[in-house]
Amino acid sequence: MTNAVYIVDAMNYIFRAYHGVPATITGPSGMPTNAVLGYLRTLLRIIKERKPQYLVSAFEGETSFRQTIYPAYKANRPGPPEDLQPQLAYCRRISEAIGVRCFELDGYEADDIIGTIALRMADRGYPVVIVTGDKDMSQLVRDGIRVYDIAREAWLDDVAVREKFGVTPAQIPDLLSLLGDSVDNIPGVHGVGDKTARAILSVCPSVEELVVSPHLDEQFSFRGRTEILRKIRENIESVRLSRQLATIACDAPIHVTPDTVRYRRGDSRTLIPLCDELGFRDIFHDIPIAVAQPSLF
Image (cartoon, rainbow, N blue to C red; front, side, top):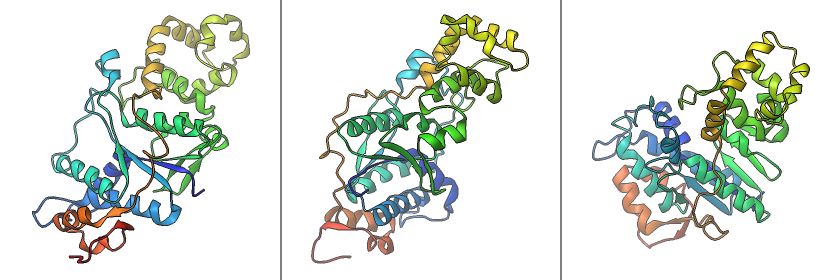
């Protein structure tokens, strides 16, 4: 699939690298560079193994519209560790320097940027591969869009999502609206577990069906059915809010065309001083170069 569009969930792999690559790796200035190095290796692995024509990275905006809807959203999440914060800017710079464009927009999360690019390119007929280890991205899977966790060599298509989560990709937000998410501080419905949520969604296309179709109750056989269904209906506004928070927005106002997502290869005029600044001289030679200059280092 050389014409596939690869969209990298930058923050997912930056945090993985931060926790997985030794913190003793530093640049000439003494700044830790473990997250930058691990993230760069992920990009280079995609470039080497997949040989993409189209490759971009998605980063987080400063704020999220979800916090306007629900101020407690992600309120319990700490900010990036102190020694990771300066590395984030370098992750953006190294991406652009090797020819991988970065997309981000204030008010939107990386998930929304990824969803927007994925749908717009899929609608143009391009196969799309979302490179991430985030389970929430599974809701974007459909014909022409797959999820690839390069760290685990795991691929998710429609069938794999159903097998892993017990629901269709389109039902992932409904699943999260019932279960909640303690990491993102999404409320959910207290007392509804994974097995019960799956049982409900095996009958209902969405949780909303429980409101408009009360006759569905007869089709459920799980323990405590009456009490659980009553609790969901009584808390339907909270469920709707949770679903809204869990749903990836695919309409971010960004400019997406085949040209804006094209992988451009590196420019040594930018790469040489940047690799020198980071202490990445050895890895420089693994980077495909489009624009070179006579003297390297």
